[in-house]
Image (tube, rainbow, N blue to C red; front, side, top):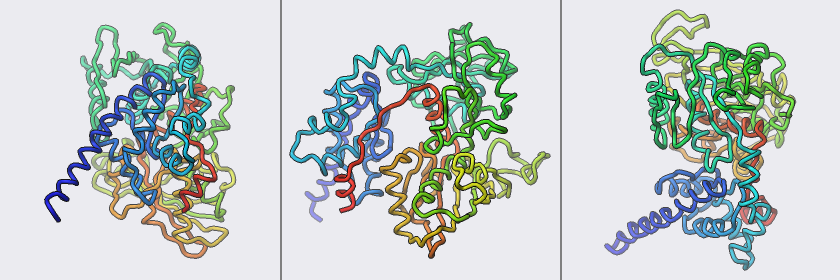
Amino acid sequence: MSHEQINQYLSNWTERESTAEAMIPLIGRLHRKNNVVTSVYGRAIINRSVIGIIRAHRFVRQVEDSELSVHDTLPVLEAMDRLELGQAHVDIGKMAVKFKAEGDGRSLEDFLREEIGPVVGQHHADCEKNAVEDTKDVVLYGFGRIGRLLARILIEKAGGGNNLRLRAIVVRQGGADNDLEKRASLLRRDSVHGPFNGTITVDEENSALIANGNFIKVIYSDGPDKVDYTQYGINNAIVVDNTGIWRDEDGLGLHLKSRGVSRVMLTAPGKGDIKNVVYGINNDSITDDDRILSAASCTTNAITPVLKAIHDEFTIVDGHVETVHSYTNDQNLIDNYHKGSRRGRSAPLNMVITETGAAKAVAKALPELKGKLSGNAIRVPTPNVSMAILHLNLDKDVTVDSANDYLREMALHSELQKQIDFVNSPEVVSSDFVGSRHAGVVDAQATIANGKRLILYVWYDNEFGYSAQVVRCVNQMAGITYPIFPKRSREWARALAD
């Protein structure tokens, strides 16, 4: 290879970096000014570095036959920036691919005016309307693993202020003089998910954390019904209970006795008649009359969308779900007494067989699978990212290719695209999925099929992916919805198939 050819690689890379750098202010302005969330094939690109943006484009090669270039998507952002858009989710990667397939000689701006017409020119009207109607106060009751990740997501999504607004965190008094600083430190630094993307300061005088400009009151309380949120200017709030202590209607109903609370979301499987909601599956069952809801479990969220997709296409006769799950705070670091079987043994040193209710819980969101699934779990010595192995007996024959092609389609273009992700690499391991915002990720290389028998391996970040699902549920409870673009068409589908 000549010296000139070698230098060309570096020149091409430098040009891609320059193009990605030009995208960053456009992405930021669309988010802050217009409340437009941008992504590339489901990968969010807000607040991403140059390398992060390039990697998001590079990912496309795993799900399409060719890599998507930043040179294809920069013009999409530039045109969107001129259109005074109202709030929306726009996948600029898919939009660029669709323009190539369906542009038909039109200018990119004319194409976009047709594709995202309902939000074109809606910026000014939306700003006034959303400021009054769409901003919703949110309170996090508890500040453990899930609570802190929910805080990260809510702070990140604050944008122009026309979203969910994290107003307060409720915790028990820690007993330390520097309690606030300790809370801030746990939000600032995370051994699994890395540093907080921004700045956090402590306001001791007002008992608050200020994260990326968001004033978050820290309230100390020893009971859900003992807080008057209105004295902090918090009204009609959604309380997200991530303690796991109260899981039935009586316990969670205590929150509704506190002034300033309108609704409650539980980040664990609810008991009794509480609706267990898996966003993307049965979130249409949420009504204005629902005061207490559950976001089910991380495993239920991971497997239900994949099971629904397979059942819709191939019909599941029965099956077994085996969960290989990272250890959790419920287990012991070293051998000690535990009321649960086996969980008293050291979590970092053992694989621990335990029970899971996820297989049965699927039926609460997907009634057609009631009684068809069994389940078990193995806790393993990793701190985060789990896997569900789905052993399914189907009503019709299936091949590895037909199953993977179908699930890839579901991940890219169906209504489940935020729940199901798809990876087709022989080298991925659990740590590669830390931070995934999808409920579950189908590992195409691991798929096994034989006649009517299908085995699927589904990765999931049992902390971050689940937290993203919770936020989606809370958004719907708050009445905050974003139109999603682009819409799929027959021409685009044909171009992708060809």
